[in-house]
Image (cartoon, rainbow, N blue to C red):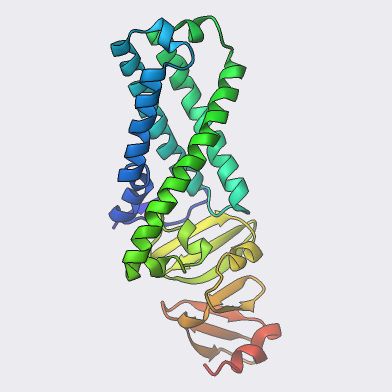
Length: 272
């Protein structure tokens, strides 16, 4: 295991090798590769965007192989970039952000490949604005087709493997950070405009509200012991009274979290 300092918002991120591979796994799975190949065949034979007229069959095959390969790589890179931004406020925002990043990364490559093959469509018939619109529209169609195929493939795997099926019950926040951190989430702490996520394998910091992070922990049982701290019940171990005014909650990893006066009676009733 290795520690990575990814950006100024990340304090410590521990990313196992197998977790990093998952960033690319969905784009290189058998159904995904079958989808990429099907798109390649259709584009090579049909020759959309003027390539049927401008290019002979061998050139057309090379052109679309480069374009589709670039799209697959750019989509995987965009997926990693969006995941590094932390849990989104909604799935719709996450999807729109991913599609936008994919479009911005892909367009320069599509433009360059078109210039390289000297297609009339790229040289004379389209502006950057129209190309952005076309690529974004095609990305939307491909994105949802890709998601549908992957979900159907994954659902069969979940149905056949009880261990995989259990991961479907993992909280949203756990799934969103799975490419950065493995292990159970022990606690969440507010830190200005960020939330520190502490797991059994390390800690990371994300720009989000504590209330949103707590909501994303459903259905994990947990509680607030302070206005800035949420704790998973399974990792709460004991209470330590420092003095008449200071009470601490000790967690499974040895962390001590303050317990505010507002939550003291409720936590003492838990029976720690």
